[in-house]
Image (cartoon, rainbow, N blue to C red; front, side, top):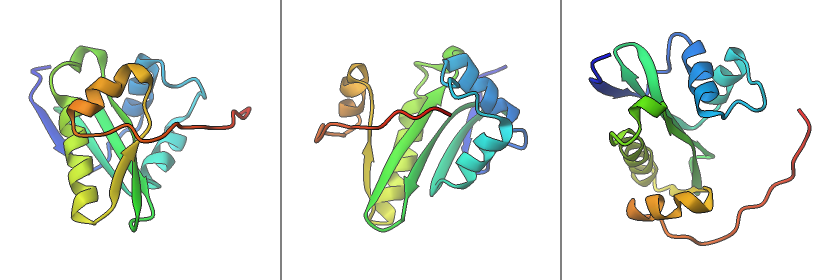
Amino acid sequence: MGKDIHYSIEPPGNFQDLVDLYEELGWNTLHLSKDELQQMCSGSWYSVYAYDNQQVVGMGRVISDGVITGVLCGICALPGYQSMGIGKEIVKRLTQHCVEHRVIPQLMCSDSLIPYYESLGFKKFTAGMMIRIDR
């Protein structure tokens, strides 16, 4: 792989790439299938994919009603592609789409990522909460 990264809103032709991405990052603790990841992406308001040739090496998406708030989520890159600016470019594109549609971009992240997202213009404003369910 020559690391010639291109970005697209077109989803991958093979969602196994996303399964592999989630697996390599340790994110697939829910054991999501290709079909579930495809449903996740198609149900998102906006998604950006980073490709090296035809392989998905990063992605991010926005969940929104398209009116008030857009929640950025799933922003990631394969370990071998991290620290190359891929996440930063994905965040920029997701945020730009929100701003163009007058939707307020928000996100939730672990405490360790707060400085990273602050460097991209985000400000801490609240605590996130959830209810864990068995799947």
